[in-house]
Length: 68
Ligand SMILES: [Cu+2]
Image (cartoon, rainbow, N blue to C red; front, side, top):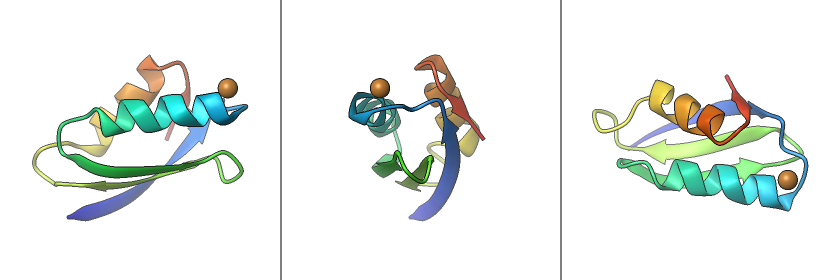
């Protein structure tokens, strides 16, 4: 299991945190996603080979936020 942290911009409330958490958790290969509004970050535990950091970024952007 690998872990990575993404920077997430554009979240303004708990609903945004939930949205980002949900889209990340829905990706095949993601075991756990912990999203922080204050830190503007998403800490993700995932299986390398099943999902990439790019997939995570794309999912966050598709949900209406910015990710780096
Ligand atoms: Cu919100």
